Image 1 (tube, one colour):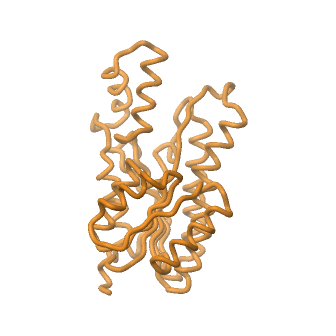
Image 2 (cartoon, rainbow, N blue to C red):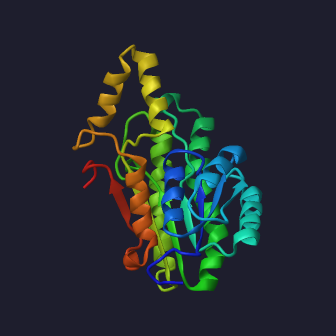
Length: 258
């Protein structure tokens, strides 16, 4: 196994059925990794797995916020493709509401999938990495974890938490050959953004183009980030050239966060 290659390494990507997660899976497969795609929709995950370069890829179905389901899914993945060397915690969800209308249930949903899910998956993957003396954990956070946005207090709190866990775990395993980083996309061309645009259109009557322009306006480049750009940052962090990069929150946002 070449030190500058992911060839043969088992990479597990959560939330890989679409959007950023699917693009990350395609990028890591092109680098030679063997992929396990984890999420709740096995059929959608399988369609992505079938499209990947290389062979040996597979899927595992689990709700990342369910501890027992996560442990079972990792055991299934490990039995099929060996110890997990790379973990990309991409599974997430975004819901908006004014602070005083943010229900306890909404708050818990945002923490569960965005923060607890990353925690549970990292706990499941870390023993393999410690045994191997090598590992990469990349948490997909958000610019919401680096700054604040109105009307998404629960989501913002969860993503701040992801960055906090990233920094803490990175220090804990810094001498173990394992790096832990966060990638923080700005508004990206995904289903989450399209749902947000539809929400603005439905509530305000504005056109889709106007709503999309509002989201892109926070990016100094005045554009929406593409999933492939996020995936390429993940690819770099998983490679040998980023061995000294750990505990970082790398913003992929056109300069929105500096």
